[in-house]
Amino acid sequence: MSKLVFQFDADLVGFPGVRRTIAVRSGQTLLDLHDALQAAFEWDDDHLYSFWLSGEFWESDGSEYTHPFHAALPDPLGVFATGPAPKSADVRLDRLRLAKGQRIAYVFDFGDEWRVLLRLSAITADDGRAYPVLRESAGDAPPQYPEYDTEEDAA
Image (cartoon, rainbow, N blue to C red; front, side, top):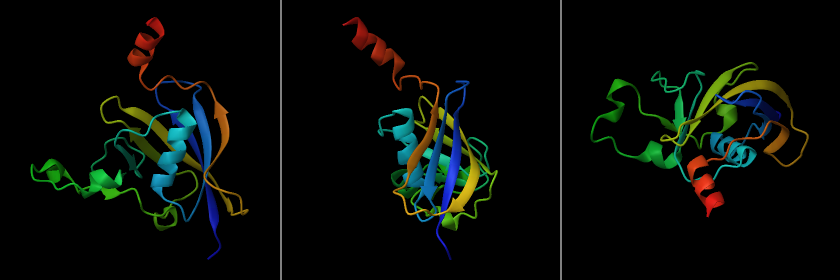
């Protein structure tokens, strides 16, 4: 099977005009896509995150893939009793049966809940470049910690 590149349009929910376009090789993982999103929106990678292949945030239909540490946690309190436990984001993209036009919901930082709606906008042949790559950036992303940044500015 030939290698492919998946191109995702990533819209930051609640911030019109803040969008990134990221390309990831099919043999890479959702974890690699997460890392690319972190860099593209200039976020520190210090929180849990999840992807929902259903395109719906916090969906309990079994389409959730989450931070590998979070997916490996035991469930003694029955947190996942309402639905299947999330799967680890270290799964390769080419194993997910993604289709052009598919929407994927992504949440980073379960407290502040940065929401990104991804759309698989193109699937192309692998050109041998290094991936992931940021192909387009529109709009300035807000600071990850607005209160903290304001306090620093005031000091």
